[in-house]
Image: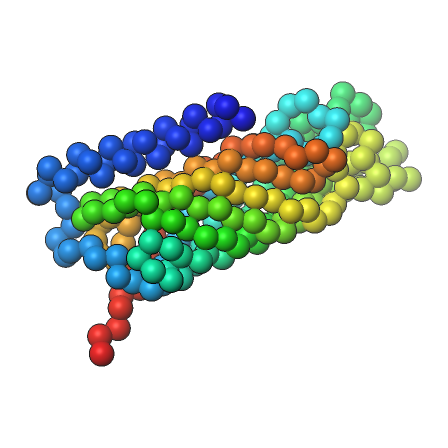
Length: 225
């Protein structure tokens, strides 16, 4: 957990230094003033997350996928957010997986998260935010066991997943605690880098993982009266 916190803190520190240094660079900023007066913004990105797909496994897997988020800013500092994250990847399994003809089975996950954003600092060039999200996550752990050889057809994919150390398919709470650095390209467009500490409740104990996403923000312009 300490390494994950250090990584997240390092990304946010880089964002803060970007804010500081950019104040002295008048030629590199967006042409139009960035006022952060928008009420709505959307974020689309690619996402990486590590995970452990079963209670008895000792090695982690890597997820890759996409993240889509919408934020409504209640004030210039506080926003409410809702997002979807979809992830897929192949996982290590117990040593007996070869008996069932399974090698690094596919796992995928769908997450719907809700929470709040706090804008810590902002200027013409960049903004630094913190966020806390929570919501349900549905994991499908038998996707890679459905094609087991004919000799194992007396078992269902879910049973084989259990035999090789994976969770049963189910929905569990998941939490994403982190921040983001938004580097402005114009008043309405920005590039975001966002690391997270992930807490999941798929097993009997809370487990901690790391995630990071990078993508594009579009801030909807304020309609003139």
